[in-house]
Structures are given as structure tokens and as C-alpha cells.
Length: 286
View 1 (cartoon, rainbow, N blue to C red):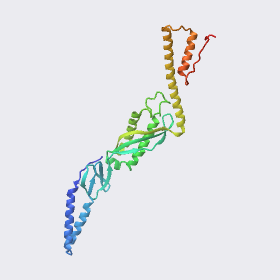
View 2 (cartoon, helix red, strand yellow; view 1 turned 45 degrees about the vertical axis):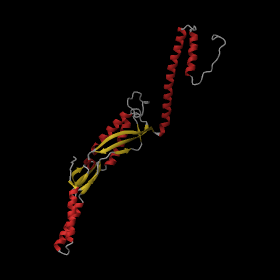
View 3 (cartoon, helix red, strand yellow; view 1 turned 135 degrees about the vertical axis):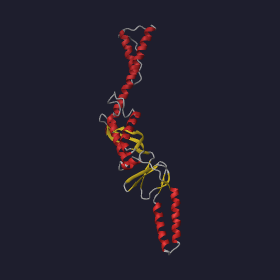
View 4 (cartoon, rainbow, N blue to C red; view 1 turned 60 degrees about the vertical axis):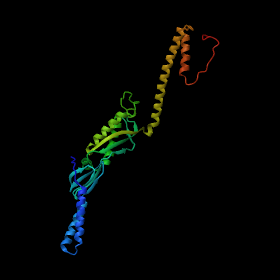
């Protein structure tokens, strides 16, 4: 468990150290008197030892203190302090870090190869765990983030072309996928005392070997959807035209003429090219 400590003020010990230096200078000024020489050496050694205890803690930084392998405590308060000179001091930054993972190739839920990458914002919350529970916590964050991305990609489809009933896909469900990615990474990094501020997919695409085929499929799907809307609108317009002609008694149409009119209107409304008008001088029965 992390233990927070607040050591002695460094300014007070700095004054003590200056006094030791003054005593040392005074003793050496009395050379060659042996008692003063011995006292001067003692004061000089004491001054050198005390200098090793000064530490400065910047904002959003911490120092983990150990003594001969035993954990002493953690200093998180910024300021100028003095600690036991024999303490081993390890600096742990508490500032937010931005990890932009490289784009990696994985398979989605249906086995399609995709390229995916993410941006993870994280910071150390527990200095004790970051220092002692894992060997190298920045490397640990990178490895576990990539592992979480692989797991997430394998649980969901790239889009809903393969699975039309899929409620969550990597491409369309940005917020939901980001929340799941954040939760997955946070669970993996809890052992190192690291919290996730934000995790979001930054790169998502089909792998190069299937990108062209998938693009053609998307284009075909878009064309079919557009055609369906065109046909739906054309049917409504033909229905309205027949209804208006019959209501206003402009012309009386038998079933064959109605069929001919419907055929012509549908051809004009649904065709890709502009219609070419044809004047019929005779009768449709001839």
C-alpha cells in the first residue's frame, strides 16, 4: 500500500548545513591544532552527508523513498524537503501522458483483417504500484493498451454489412466503443496504479488486401439503397398521376393504356439518362 509522508523542510536543514560549513571553515582556520583539525574533518563529512538529503518536488511529481530495499513512503506534495541522505529516491511523474498506439492489423468479429489504432490518455495515481508492482510501467501501458485494442476488435464487427442486426460496430458506434476500450484498458492497468483519463480509436480501416473489395461492396450497397428510394418515389408519383387524371376526368384510360402510361412514367422517373420524347401520330392499338 502507498504511504504518503511529508519530510522535514529543506530550508531548515539548509541553514543547518550552512552552519556546519561555517564551523568547518573556522576549525580549519586554526591549523595546525590537532583538535580543530579533527573537528573540521568531522564537520566537513557531516556537511557532505546532509547535502545528499535535499530533494525538490515539482508540481504533479512524486518521489518514492526506499532504504536498503525497504519501502519508506512517497512524497507527493511539491516543495523543497530534506530526507535521510541514505534513502534511495525514485521519481514518478503524476502528469497526464498521451499514448498514440501504432496502427496494428487484427481480425474483427467476422475474421475480416482491419487496421486499428487508438489514443490513450493516462496518468499514475498510485506511485507505489507503478514503482514496485511492474518492472517498467510506460512499457506496461503500451503493451496492455495494444492487447486491449486487439481484444476489442475481435468482439465487434467493422460495420453492419456482415451483421445487419449488430447494434454496436467499430465504425458507427464511436462513443460506445470508446467507453468499452477505456474500461478494458483501465482494468488491465489497475495493477500498476494507473488510471485512464480517455481512450479513443484514432485509426480504423480495412486491411489493404480487402480494402478494394469492401469499397466496391459499400458502393454497391449505396447504389441499391438509392435505387430503392428512387423506385419508391416513382411509384408514388405514378399513383398520384393516375389518381389526378381519374379525379379530374381529363382522359379515360382502360387497363392497357394505364399499363402503357405506368411503363412510360417509370422509365422516365427511374432511368439514368434523360428521356427522349416520341410523338405518336397513330394509336397505341396499331
